[in-house]
Length: 547
Ligand SMILES: [Zn+2]
Image 1 (cartoon, protein in one colour):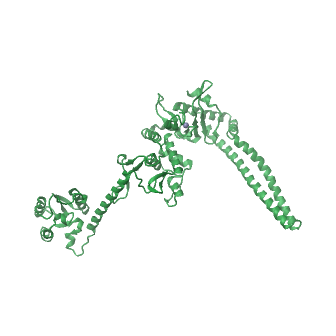
Image 2 (image 1 turned 60 degrees about the vertical axis):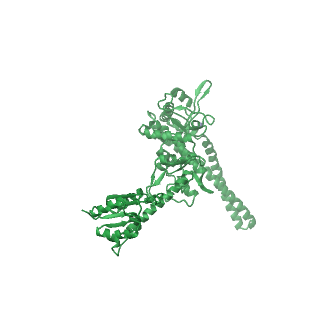
Image 3 (image 1 turned 90 degrees about the vertical axis):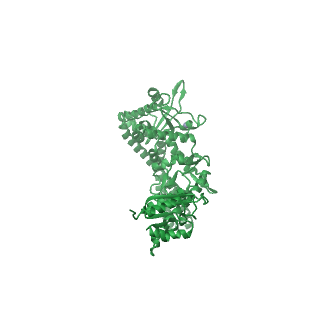
């Protein structure tokens, strides 16, 4: 029949009791008691509820039903929230506790009062479990209240985070208000620009690493000595795709205050979990935006598209490479307009702000593809057929300015080396004269100071000139390296992202123009090691291959 861990829970609420007090409601009592029973390993076999009955009278329907079941041994434990739930008449209540329950072999627990008849009969009783439970409940209640006050602040559009999001700082005069941190904001804009150009989270983090951009931890550690996150100095330029995602999906950059993007799992477990966007509390235009809505939409359109067609990545081979030479923004990809089923590109500033700010710089994917493919193939072809000429042409053209500098540097090195040797001699002679007493000490000091200053000057100029020569040499190495690489691509049939990334730094797509009745568009392909080399007229390429 009855076994040691079967329990009945009893809840009571009278009409005149304060029903606004959440923790007293029947629902809350039930919840609490069931939770408690579960944690204690009790099996709840009966719930008895008297809603609207005073505690001074024991003539309550469910209380009576519970006592009948107790007589029949249906359970061995009775739990109430506190003693007063059982009854407010302490004499009658005492009778149940002292006489009736012991006779029925019932263990009685008044949870919040920390009363347990089992422990009560044991002088070494340990109240800890119950007390703890009570404390927990109390804590939970407080945590709920804290949350409620946070919610009120959130709804008023106040910033309540402990740190401002990357790109902002807290207003020193009002910690609930954000100010733009221009330096970090520039990085945020760059990230959005990359997203607009079609790069995904991973590719953006790679770009930022290559660009040597400080990550938020490293940046914050530099501007705020109290910030400190461990390990930041080891990889200050190491960006993780997840931090890119965090930035690209944070509506704070639109000027909005967003709270409730994460919450703690429970009052005990501080682990943060993400909440769905419909649970976010968004209050618009509370501070200066870093990103405008159109840029945001453009970036998110791309991110969504990438998500859908990750295996169809071929279209995105140009992502991050295309620049508008007029305004410096990336070109934005848009798919499938005007029957170009591979899509097309436009200046993203033009896209976002219109023709007052820039022109379209429109080019279709197919046209661009042909121009770039042909340019690589022709360079590869020339490199293979006329390797010396190719290297020579590159050296001559790609480093024209450098060549001039190098020539001068070469002469400088000659002249300065001679002068340095002369000075060495002069100083030696001067010293000799001084030692032999041919020159007064004061004049010796003056001369020495003068010559040594000149020597120092000559030596630093010499070093600079040698560096220029060194630079020219490394430019030559670059050209040789480039030549080796491009030789492989003479028969290139298909462009891929790895090939483009190996060879090309960026592609500047000019605006279409009509010159002498002919449509032209300048497309400058800036190669990684050699820069821009106009070996072939872009017009020629564009006109015969791409229109
Ligand atoms: Zn532009």
